[in-house]
Image 1 (cartoon, rainbow, N blue to C red):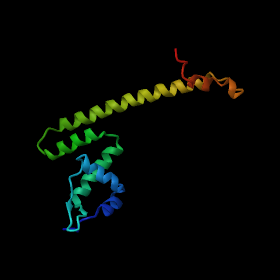
Image 2: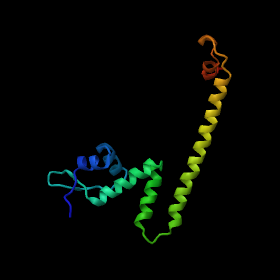
Image 3: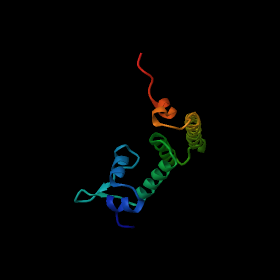
Image 4: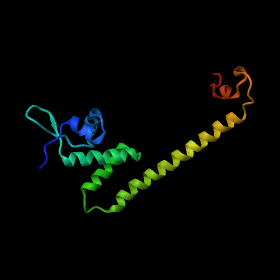
Length: 136
């Protein structure tokens, strides 16, 4: 058995800030770790694997609640894989919506640039388009 890791060691090994690790514990993505006699957090290989899973899921854009679901499914080894697929499909649909929103934003910004004849800032159509409409 390997020696337990402190929060600093776990942070360094996983590239995760200690405050992020504490936050993940607080919201239940990581189990509360064992404590040493000096009340220091003691992490093991399982904690390290769980943190790596959470970090990777966050890198892929999964929401905290989706990660919580995926962890729960992972702990129910006999559960149907389709439940995991449903979470991933929902995430894919969310990504598609965000891509569509970003493409619409890109188009709007390109139209703003296209309508700008150049010249003085005082006559800038881009700045004009960004100003809020006057209150009624």
